[in-house]
Image 1 (cartoon, rainbow, N blue to C red):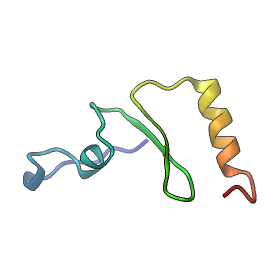
Image 2 (image 1 turned 120 degrees about the vertical axis):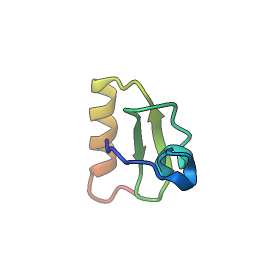
Image 3 (image 1 turned 90 degrees about the horizontal axis):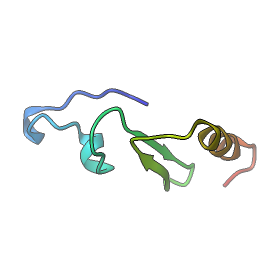
Length: 62
């Protein structure tokens, strides 16, 4: 998670919110090593998130 301030060019909307089409803050986006968005939502289920992050951080995961 991160907090990014918007700028006047984007009407105060942070670039990350535009890029990943978030619906507000806080918003969770998980991106794998190849740059694919594997999770993008406001809500997060802790057990599923932990499992996903463990899977993505395993050595040799591509």
